[in-house]
Image (cartoon, rainbow over all chains, first blue to last red; front, top):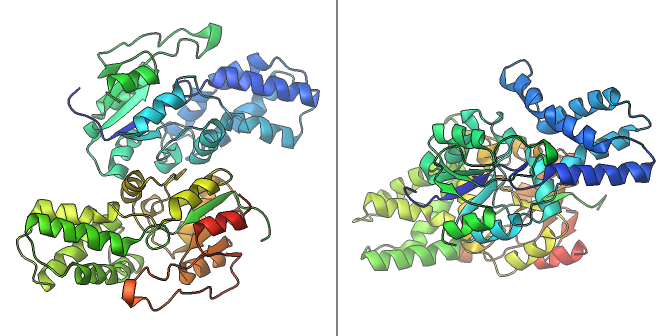
Amino acid sequence: MPQSPVAIVFDTFGTVVDWRSSLIADLSAYGAQRGVKADWPALVDAWRAAYQPSMQRVRSGELPWTRLDDLHRGSLDRLITEHGITGLTEEDKVHINLGWHRLNPWPDSVPGLTRLKSRFIIGPLSNGNVSLLLNMAKHAGIPWDMIFGSDLFGHFKPDPETYLGVANMLNVRPDQVMMAAAHNGDLAAARRCGLQTAFFPRPTEYGPHQVRDTKAEQDWDIVATDIQDMATKLGV
Amino acid sequence: MPQSPVAIVFDTFGTVVDWRSSLIADLSAYGAQRGVKADWPALVDAWRAAYQPSMQRVRSGELPWTRLDDLHRGSLDRLITEHGITGLTEEDKVHINLGWHRLNPWPDSVPGLTRLKSRFIIGPLSNGNVSLLLNMAKHAGIPWDMIFGSDLFGHFKPDPETYLGVANMLNVRPDQVMMAAAHNGDLAAARRCGLQTAFFPRPTEYGPHQVRDTKAEQDWDIVATDIQDMATKLGV
C-alpha cells in the first residue's frame, strides 16, 4: 500500500449489508401479516436482477438522472404484475420499496467500521440515494461519517464522477481515498480513477445463485476476509 | 409544534462550536510555537467580520461558487498583510486556514446531539464545505448522521436552495425538517422555506463584541437554553 488513506468508502449492497436475506425476511413477514401470497425469494432475486439494467438506462442517457428509490419502484411495479401478486395497496408498495432502507449488516460490518472510524473518514459510496443510505444507517446502526449517495454526483458507479467526486468533496487526491467492496468490478473502476482498493468476499450475497466475486481478481491494495480483518490489516 | 420532525439540521459556527475561543487559543498557541507575533484575537475577529461580505460576493454572482475554505483563505491573506503579520510560510497559512476545521463544541453540544440522534436524523446545515464540517466532526467528536455542507447545494445560507435542498435530499416535506440555530436570521430564512425552527442563545459567541441574538425574536417552534434543553423539550 503506497500510503495510509485519509478516507475509506464502501460499496454497500452486498458489501456492508446482506440485502438478499434481509429483503426475503422482511417481505415474507410483511406478506404474512398482510395476507398477501407470493414467492418472495423469487421476487427479491428478480428485483435485484433489474438493478443494473435500470441504472444502465440512466448511465446511457435514455433516462434523466433518477434516484435509485425511483428505479426500484419502477422495477417493483413491473415485477408485481409479472409475478401475479395481487392485493397490494399503494401503501403496501411504498412500504415494500422502502425495504431497501431496512437492510441488515453482515455480522462484521458494524464492529469493523467502528474500528476503522477511529482513524479514517468512512462513508458509503453506493448507487443508493442519500435518504436510502441514511435510513439504512439509522436502522442498522452503521456509524458513517458522511453519506456519499449517488444523488450527490448525479451518476451511478462505475461512472468516474462518483469515485473522483468523493476525492473532490474531501479536497484530497484520488490516491488518498480507498474504495472497499466485495465486487471486483467496482474496485477495477475505482483503481482506474486512481483510488486505493480493498477487497473482501461475500460468498453468500446472492444465496444459491452466486457465480462471481468469490475471490480477488487483481492485486488489490488490501485483500481481507471481512471488514474486521480489513481493520486489522490497516493496523487499527 | 405541528408534528415531530424527521430531521434536525444545525447551524454550526457559533451554534454548535465556539469558533472564537477555539481559534484564538489555536492560533495563539501556534504563533508562540512558531515565534510569530500577532494580536491573534484581533485577527480572529477581523477574519470573522470578513465572513459575510466574502459569501455575499458569491450570493450576488460577483464570484462563481467558491468553497468557504477558499473564501477564508482569501480573507486571511488580505488580513495578514493589513495586520502587519510577518514570517508566515505557505505551510503556516495552510495550517492557520484549517483552524476552522479544528473548532471545539460548546459543552452541551455533543451530549445534546447524541440524545437527539437517538430519535432524529441530525446534520449540520452550514456555510462550511463538507470537508471542513467533516474534519470538524472528527476533531470534536460530533455524531452527525449526514453532513449538509454548502457545496452540496452550491449555495450559501440564507439562499432557499440550502434549506429546501435538505428536504429534497431526504425526500421529505420542508415542514418535516427542523432548523436549529443561535441566530434569528437563519431561522427566519428557514421558516420562510417552511421548515420548523429551534432557537437557543449563545451569548458569548462573539466574546465582548456580541450585539445580537441574545434572545428569540420570533415565536420559534422551540426556544431552549441549549442543545441539551432542546433535546429535553423534544422529549428525548
